[in-house]
Length: 384
Image 1 (cartoon, rainbow, N blue to C red):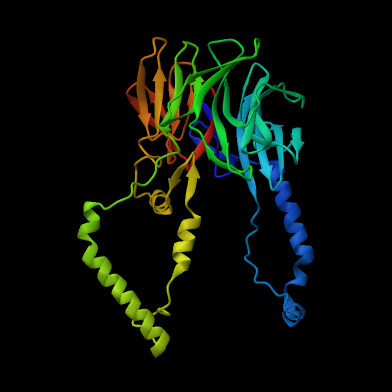
Image 2: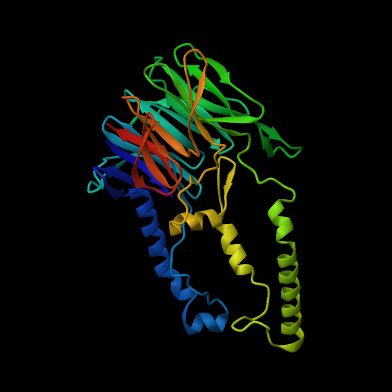
């Protein structure tokens, strides 16, 4: 089994236990262009002249760009990926062979936004729109760029998936937009589970709950439906006092008092009570920590949890256990397959490949085999 996936806006492939990165030519070329511009204009912000005019700027050393891989799928032996660069969104196709740098443009536009997509028998179901809050389901046949939109309205349809059991049926999640008096999206409804019959153009909502989001809906050739279920809006921190808060009251009071006293001594006495410190409130660490927080489908993954994952100190799923993978049988009965699931892919033989945000595992009944460590792996593509 070969697995291709995206992780932190890079594409990786696992083949026989070996993991390698597949280059994204569009992103690499964009980086080269920006770096070339930076080198040509850096004289304006460096050197004695720039210091004299006040235009001098400290170089960070690393080029930072706004790039995001929006989706990934396999089509007729080729890899298709979507990418958003600043205000432009594009779809490209290329070989799975990382040494083959040839890429072909399928569709691009400054007025387009792409979500995830799925291919089956040469047809692609894609989530697209003019802005990220209004994505709709469309079908196309890559590498042709023409597409036909199947849904519309003030809503967002995401993660389309061609049914493996029902011909020309597309599963997806749908959420309506709630707008304020200025016309901006102020809230999003719970994500319901829907499907559309492409031949008839008929759409049906078959999963809905005011307290639940239904995400990444798929089916297998036996008619079983799978989806990720989580609390509406994602897992949120519970407010109020905990028993540990009461135990830590004395420590926190003393820490706060010492911090205030240290600050006063620094300001009025010119010397901190702590050696090796300037005595001033250190917001840099807190700022860095908050910037590393990420949001996945409404779930806030704290930087402290990410740090534990990086240090290998925590083997628990990165996602909250309230986010579960569910299998729904033809008779309507439901079974929780796995807790703490970020993304998944169905194998043709009934096995399931699962990403929990830390690793990719193969689930075969009650047996679970770790395939590879993979941070925030999504858009899993299987080549069986």
